[in-house]
Length: 244
Image (tube, rainbow, N blue to C red; front, side, top):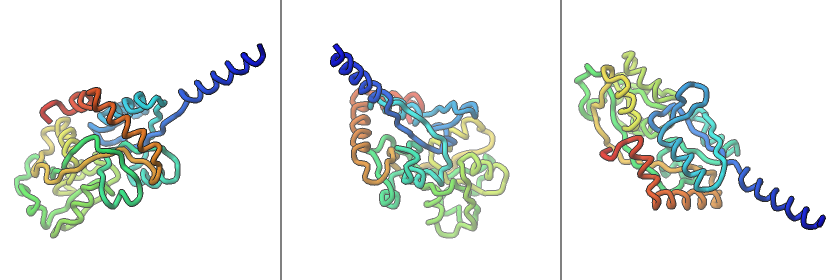
C-alpha cells in the first residue's frame, strides 16, 4: 500500500514537472505588427506573439515573455537570462557566429520611408547626402552603414523612435523592415510613405544560445509540425493577409 502510494506521488511529481517546464522567450516588443505592448502593461500582441504561443503549445511548455531592449537581447540570451529570442531577427552570417537560428519562419525585406511630402527620394542613390534614421543593430542599420554617400546615420533603440525622427525632420528617411514600416504608415497615413520598396530579402528565425542543439531541434520540430498543420499560414494570414 505504501509502495503504491509512493509510486503514485512520484508519477504526479513527474507529470507536474513536465507541464511546469517554462520556455522563456525575449524580444524587443516595440516592433508592430510583429510584437508590441497594447496597453503598456505587458499585454503583448502581434504576429510573433501568436507564433511563440503556437510553438509553446506544440512543444508542451509554458510560455513566459520578456520585453527587453534590442541591444541587450543577444548578450542576455548568452548570459542565460532567456531560453530563446523571437524578435524579428534576421538570420545573418555575423549573428550566426554568436547564436544559433531555427529554420526560417518568415521572409521580409528592407524599405526606405520618408515624409509624405518628400519627393526627393525615389531610389537608394537619392539617399546620398541625406540623414537616415535606423534602429540600432538591425539589418536596416547595417544596410545604411554600407551605403555610400549618406551624410549621417541616426541610431535609435526602437523603430518608432526612428520613424519619429523622420516625422520631426531630424532625419530625411528611415531604412526599416517592410511590414513594420507599412504598419506604422497604416496608423498614420498622412505622415510617412514608402519611397523605395523592398530592396533586400531577409529571413527571420527563432534564436537560441550557441550549441543548444536540444532546444533548437525541439523548436525546428515544432515549426515543421505547425507548417504541416497549416497553423503557420493561418498566423501569417491573420496579420499580413494572403496577398502580402
